[in-house]
Image (cartoon, rainbow over all chains, first blue to last red; front, side, top):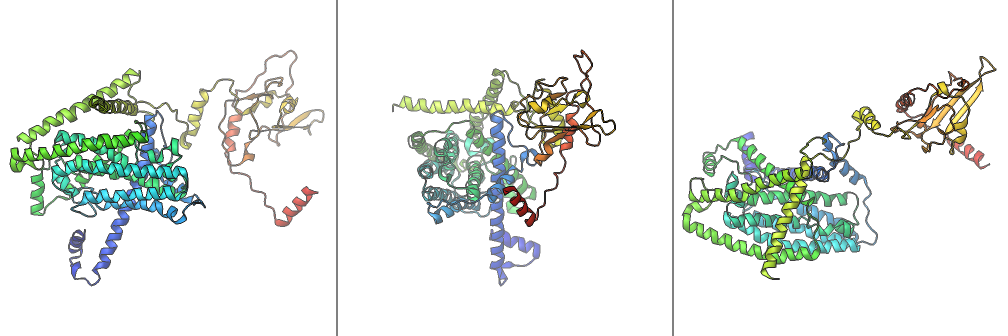
Length: 423
Length: 204
């Protein structure tokens, strides 16, 4: 980020900030501004997602959902947040006062810290770390500290149960999660999120999910582990309303309660961004090949529009994935605790191990077969590119067609018809 | 667990998720069951649309057609909770005749039991299908059918009459309901002494 800022100052003010006496003030101010901007972005995304999720949930239950505050109800989240801020911030007298008060900030911090490395588009992220993915897995673990703290400090059995479940769940699912993330890491050969994206291409058959069967299976399993780590249905056992009141946030009220929900909905963006980075080609724009991009970079003439287009592509992918997560939530019922554990240890972990092995083997084989052309997106003319396209047709295109046929069949079978009115 | 069972579990998971997801997704393309009620922007027209779906004997706000009211007080006596208030005075122009100077129905109190409708000899008091009358103050919910400046004379029933020319149901109450949405009456301002005197008088 420092270089970007230096370049900006040089280009706009024609001065060199390196020779300024108090240059650290400028850097500190820029840091604060970026931090503030990203946190506000996270909060806005969380708020809008809360509204959108309620609309989608309503449609799936043949209802309409909040559509009164603002155009189509878009400002509903402002009303909700205002309500939460105005409400009394109750702290139960029997609770561990200090821990109870700081627990939501742990959750918020774990959520906000992920924005340090999350990419938004070509060359757009707060920092570029060469261990970006490792950092991401590390800071998201901070959330569980906050959840356990709140469960313990509330001095309520519901909250304690919720906290313990969350701890068991998140710690367990980090193992298959990390293992499945190794599949795209092996394919890309880097932990840097931007490098992982650059190893993919703009078209679906250049994405890691459709390059090999291992990537394809790993995508779905990684998706499941991300759901579990974000405490989303079908893995929302920590807050299971029908069993635990509200789990670890039972005793919370007011804006502290709001922080948990902010982190939960904001996590949707984080999850989706990570998945789309690892498996869905991130900000790669179709028709802009790696060579073209490298050429632009070498000549220093990356068009400004490319920044915008790549950001738009990335945001579209993330929004689609967020919708899928919402859709899963309103389809699948919550699983039991023992099922949650057996899914993790009996299915995800062994299958993940197998996938990592197979992915490593494939990399070695592909290097033997194709030599230097084994890395990165392959042009369609090459044998590797043809293989990718064939796999995409089998694993991607055919199920999509079948899926939509089944949907229209479902509508027909119930004697209903397609009708998009009554929003 | 045998391997066949293990694989069958995976197959079940994938299949049930696939089936379920196609069902929920299909609801995005269907019309929701919910009938949208009026927002503030289209309140009146939507209200009338909903009103048309109500049964003809729906017990909404009460309505009195003073043109056929005989001032018999039967409804006032029938009301179990004193919702109706009628005042009858001598006509100052012609002392031999009586006039109604007040006919108030407090819709804020009314429980829509219909007991006032039963004894009415001419069918003057009736329930309408009007139901929407949100108000900022409770006292604004009193329907005043008689303008005190223009007292209403009672209706004389012709001998042997069995049918009476009643105004269209709802045509009298609807304008009154619209008039309801007016600013609330000023709050009674009491000074401290007045309040104390008031309390003392009450205790006495």
